[in-house]
Amino acid sequence: MRAVLLDIEGTTTPISFVHDVLFPFARQRLHAFLEAHRSRPDVIIDLKRLEDEYHHDAGAGLNPPALEEPYLHWLIEQDRKSPALKALQGKIWQHGYKDGSLQAPLFPDVLTAMTHWQTTSVSINIFSSGSVLAQKLLFSHTDLGDLSALIDKYFDTSVGKKNEPESYERIAKELGLTANEIHFVSDVVVELDAARQSGMLTSLCIRPGNAPQPSKPEHRIIHSFEEME
Image (cartoon, rainbow, N blue to C red; front, side):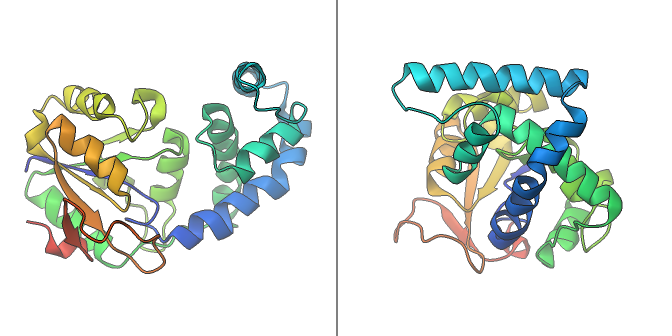
């Protein structure tokens, strides 16, 4: 193992933080954020992407509600991995982390494991459906301190969906490693299936509050990063 590739939600961070804290925080502040920042060049780009997604959904017969806010709330309710939504959420969370409203709780073994991996020259990388900005913000504002110096690269769905083997092949290429030198850890079996198809080592992470997974998954089961070799 020359690199680890870690999911966030349900793997390094409790699912409750994402669903019960981050998502409501962004939803409650969405209107005010758009009113204050819609003329920013980066937000203009996000809103154009949102419009493209809207037309795609409308063309597919999904009957989405009107742009912009009703559609954004609709995407949130469906837990859609919308690039435009994720980008806007990340920008809203940035304000929350900056003013101290948000702090990410991590499982206690995360810092110990990351420190060990760094000292043994194992590259530490993140792959999440949240934007790269959101990932960086989370790991630099945790209850265990700023962990950003421990992490080498962040990947979001711009490399592909998490349930597609090609996404993991692209990540391996970006890291300059063969897939079998990378150990992917997630709480979702379909993601692990895709990573294994690419050739990666895999572990299913069981944490308190995680959704039930198949009773006989074809992946090693761990309850702590300390169990990884």
